[in-house]
Image (cartoon, rainbow, N blue to C red; front, side):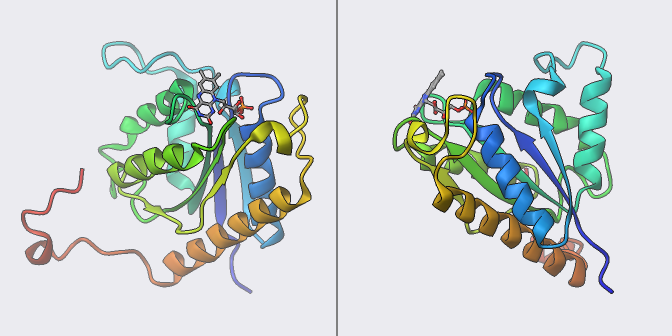
Amino acid sequence: MVDSVRIVGIGGSLRPGSSSLAALQAALDGATKAGADSQLIAVRDLDLPLYNPHRDVPDPALQFADIAYRADAMIWSTPTYHGSVSGSFKNALDWLILLADRDPPYLSNKPIGLVTTAGGVQGLQAINSMDFIVRALRAWAVPLVMPVAQSWQAFSPEGHITDESVTRQLHVLGEEVVRAAHQFRRDGSCDYSDEQQFAGVATG
Ligand SMILES: Cc1cc2nc3c(=O)[nH]c(=O)nc-3n(C[C@H](O)[C@H](O)[C@H](O)COP(=O)(O)O)c2cc1C
């Protein structure tokens, strides 16, 4: 019997009826169906202050960082704002600086599935923005991504998915993240310890 992998989802907007939050839930449902233990963290519920290195670290930031660190893999879901990720979503990720001194640091060796909902057709820009952040945090983006274009057509105002094909694709993304998490677990990690090979290569 293979131990189940732990998948943590972070995302959604601050808006009630957030479509990116509903999309995240659907992707996590796919992960759960594929045998994972899944946990959803809504950015709205975290209610984090803007990251400021000169203030005391709030408990929700510590808890979020710890939960992210213990995950085998993550799914990120942001609304597309001005051709990129939303400020509140990025702020939550900025607090992961708390993982800088862990061993291994940040989100090393974790596959991340990427989802966005966009009012127009610029969702891939938010996906690409997340891809940069994934790499800065030493994680690995799962190749299958899910930018939901014209979200008003696929979600009700209350934040329910109304397009069955969107649900199906989000489930597949969740399954794919679970598959990648098992793969990383089987292979141990992607080992950077060969300093000779990586000498001079920036990883931050
Ligand atoms: C501040 C702001 C900026 C936005 N910028 C874009 C954009 O650049 N491209 C786009 O396709 N949609 C844009 N939208 C529309 C949102 O991406 C869309 O409504 C999305 O589904 C919102 O996610 P939510 O339901 O989780 O709040 C923007 C919305 C807001 C409020």
